[in-house]
Length: 73
Image 1 (spheres, rainbow, N blue to C red):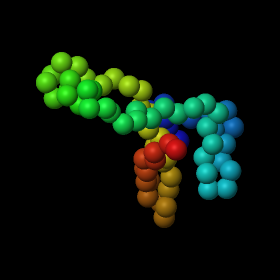
Image 2 (cartoon, rainbow, N blue to C red; image 1 turned 135 degrees about the vertical axis):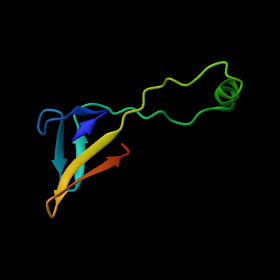
Image 3 (cartoon, helix red, strand yellow; image 1 turned 90 degrees about the vertical axis):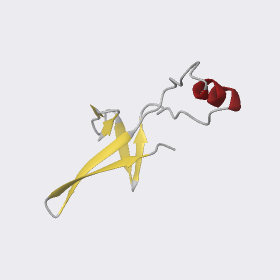
């Protein structure tokens, strides 16, 4: 389990409750961009540097390592 490429430890950083992962801290999502922000990006005036975290789950199935990226809710 990784958040933005940083390893997470079960019990310390998150808990697994059934099929859900519950993190001990809030994970940030960028959210929708408004028309002013889109216009400023289109014109090259400014970019967007909001916090956006990704969760990558690494697991094995039949001896093959698999990585899945999840979107926090």
